[in-house]
Image (cartoon, rainbow, N blue to C red; front, side):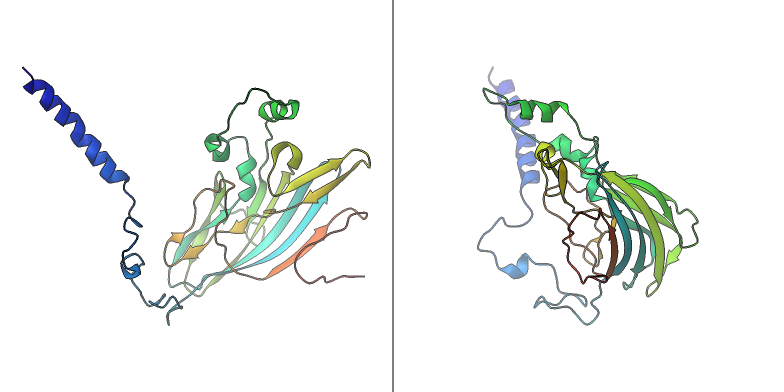
Length: 265
């Protein structure tokens, strides 16, 4: 009489064991395994020593950015001309850009994975943060070529894909323009590494601005395009390039940024 129950137990245990095997990590299972079994196989792009190989390449993206801070509305408005150099051996039919500010949009995946705890008490500020949802993120107003002709593009949360009118061949360069604006978040309410702080006694704002422009995603030999969603924790590798940035801010503001100031007077 016990045999049917035994068979049923085995039927349940077998899938459970298979599930555990699927969840086992691919790497790092043996702390004493030799590194040459963990690291990828050397190739012409990346040598076994970790140095670049004789066919190593990396893409280049140059930016000419004009950006303006509206202190009355707490918004940033900008436009950019991007010059993208395809130094890879691959043909590219589309380009990916990162829209990091979109992690602050109401439909962002960041809100869906965020966890927290409820204690015995809740402050007024905490309750306000729960009820007052900030709808941030880039508002892309145009994506065009240099002549002003619209380029087809698709926004997937924190990523934007531009479908090129013709294939970008190895060694070729393409230029395009992007225009945008976005509302700046209140750091005291919503946190984050960037945003504004309001000082009521002086009736003024202090701004910390980061991730303020759409930027090229990485295209590399080891993964192709990096188009994973940005969730606000850590940041992805970016493409190197040259920057020319013109910042318009109120006359009574002091601007601190990296780079070499071109108009000190």
